[in-house]
Length: 528
Image 1 (cartoon, rainbow, N blue to C red):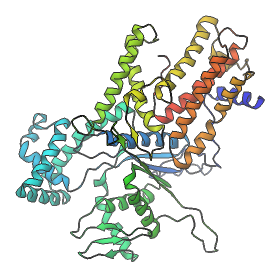
Image 2 (image 1 turned 45 degrees about the horizontal axis):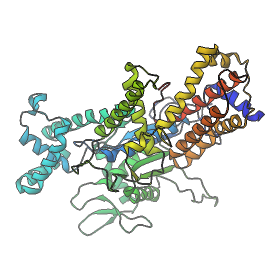
Image 3 (image 1 turned 30 degrees about the vertical axis):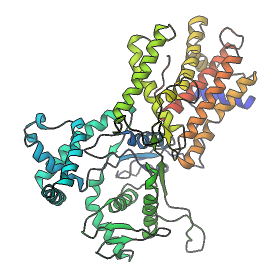
Image 4 (image 1 turned 45 degrees about the vertical axis):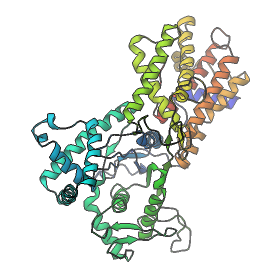
């Protein structure tokens, strides 16, 4: 009991829950790897982590398939940043490849005046259909297909016109990606496939020099790794490059140029074998040292790097198939997010009409946005990412059960109690904390239970670091909210003899909840 009371008291003084002690891994920040400054000798080097997530394709709108990588990736970044890692957030966009040959040609034919101003350039909504139309013409028109293939060669060779059209397609797409990222508070730096073009030949040469390339029939250059019958193809028989080539160049760049000690890839689970082969090839050539290697004296060495692939399952409709619109089209991510906010706004307006809401008309949209976007995120993050799930607005916007809406209401309820303590009883929690005159006393069993849950926060973060699955934090904050609900139900707070101590316990809980919300990428609201 005394230990928990001291723990809660310390939490309040710090203004945040306690971070885990990770065997000396808490590091002060020092300059990025590219900096010429080495920092002070007393500072331990920051661990650089590359997180590769979101990764939409240029000339296509972001759809529901990009939802999981984007929000899981943002949460993983926040967790690692919280633990003082230097996180490089990488958006490995699909901005290169054979498809651009047909897109360039279709744009030249259908929008010949696009260079004269914005009027001739289709917006992204048109571009989605534009992509389908270009693909259809590519499949049906041999002459168009031939010219498109020549455009690919010209683009790769740096032809000015092809490059200019390619840049237009990239710029328009980025503007649409930002609409999603702004809604979801996503921060990510683009470094697409095209960035690695000139880095691929040296990688192939290095594999050849070390005798690790096998030339297959037709001339394709391949690398075989243990446990997989199908090889990584570093160069196609026609001399071209594919995903294998790009990903090997990317991992070398990240390991050697960015000095990453930890790389995390977040894609759908079907790419799991591909990334395990990439990791195995990196070990085979010596870019990464295995954890079970022996040194010169026969001792087992620690792994030099950590390479993770978080593979996620499919977002499904009520029919158990991939989530699509009624017409069978892929759901645009912007539309999905806006619908969640619209439904939340309707729900809040009904509560306002009934006199059950504590927000103004001016606050309505911002509150609905925080809750709607948070609901979509939490509905995904609260489960093991490897599992599929059925997308349901009704379930994710439910005020009961393990939802963001329930958690945000629980948080607002506690903050409302704190506000009433100041308004009705002249007890200011902030003054109590700064003066340190009131001690936290956990006399009731529900108070002790809540204090115990608060103490579990550091353990939760340490557990999350093992697999980087955000659902551990969801489980923790949901259990914490239930413990808080039990506390305020069983213990009178306002007007009780223990009011000051119990208000402090309310604040300790909301501080911890807000830290969890931040790590999950959810905006908190102080009142609803």
